[in-house]
Image (cartoon, rainbow, N blue to C red; front, side):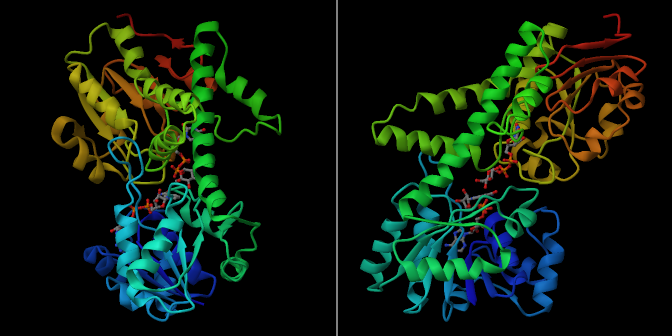
Length: 439
Ligand SMILES: NC(=O)c1ccc[n+]([C@@H]2O[C@H](COP(=O)([O-])OP(=O)(O)OC[C@H]3O[C@@H](n4cnc5c(N)ncnc54)[C@H](O)[C@@H]3O)[C@@H](O)[C@H]2O)c1
Ligand SMILES: O=c1ccn([C@@H]2O[C@H](COP(=O)(O)OP(=O)(O)O[C@H]3O[C@H](CO)[C@@H](O)[C@H](O)[C@H]3O)[C@@H](O)[C@H]2O)c(=O)[nH]1
């Protein structure tokens, strides 16, 4: 099939590249000309494992094209997929400006038979609004399909090639069958629903996962008070098939471009519809509290953080991405600086993006070793492989004090007990002291 994908962010680019990989001819469109120029040379605009190779492979096979002109992709396309951003407004509700503009930019070139697919995460009823916009403004009949995306950053290509399910929301049988046909080579379970149910599935899934994280963080905080270990508790819970072990990793809260904004959007939708949003309000409040928890532990340990030098390991909102959107490292670094500490941060990929947000309020190290040097304590924020695999015992010998605040529970007891000297604070687990420093 001939497919146009509008927006070359994490979702649009991953979708476009994978659809080319399974045999379709795909043109990816973006209004960001610089992005398109780079993509035409095979350079991805962000760090995402495996995407660069897949782009080059499909560009070389003339299955994948990039353009900044909507006409180039949309004219003659069987299917047009919209994957532009739907960010959060100040009141938490979803901002549809980019989506409306993408529809307006594409509509003039839509063919009579082409199907218009909205992959962006949108409030319930948006697909119908966009359909009406195209029909009234451009006098064109259009078949609209809601096809929400569930990929995770850091494993976007794997998730797109191996989805747990594909959700297709449509009021038209031919349109949903055509979209199912487009995805057929992926051999994934397909769920066909109404448009409104498909829109709701996306928010309900993200809000559920975010709530599951806030729940285990709440249990973790209780574990610390009652002397239990949250990892044992999560394992005990997760082995129950009805609960599952996924998303039971306690830590310093969720970040990223989706959970924070989608939970708040669903909250706004609840309020608009007169449904008590109390449950989701607690999810958000718990997450905000959790992002401050390591700083509270440090304050308790040191009384004052003035003139302390702290190493911050990991800046991106999760490993294997350079995305800093809503990363827990941002409030944490700001708080430490406000309390008078000097912060030196290390991240394998996200420093460039972190500098745009945190600027020169903190320092940046080129290596883990450099960050450890003379540090009064180490804060672990993101569980990159390089960080979880580091030789912590040896590295701590170069720090001023062997004190670690681990926000992602990266090390087991064996690794901590092998250190000559360490004071190890983690989330939802007892503090470990191995020949701790005197002060
Ligand atoms: N990031 C994720 O992991 C993820 C996963 C599932 C769903 N989603 C949802 O998918 C949507 C896209 O998210 P993203 O993270 O890929 O966004 P993004 O911000 O990374 O990228 C959006 C792209 O769209 C382009 N764009 C904006 N207006 C345009 C227009 N009129 N024509 C062409 N291009 C235009 C921008 O220049 C940008 O490159 C959002 O609704 C998001 O909630 C995101
Ligand atoms: O047990 C867990 C799992 C995740 N996280 C945190 O939750 C955030 C989000 O992680 P993850 O869900 O892996 O990454 P995203 O790329 O944000 O993906 C989520 O958001 C996407 C955008 O909507 C959806 O498509 C995905 O299905 C959904 O998992 C990160 O800060 C993680 O550190 C935890 O704290 N504990």
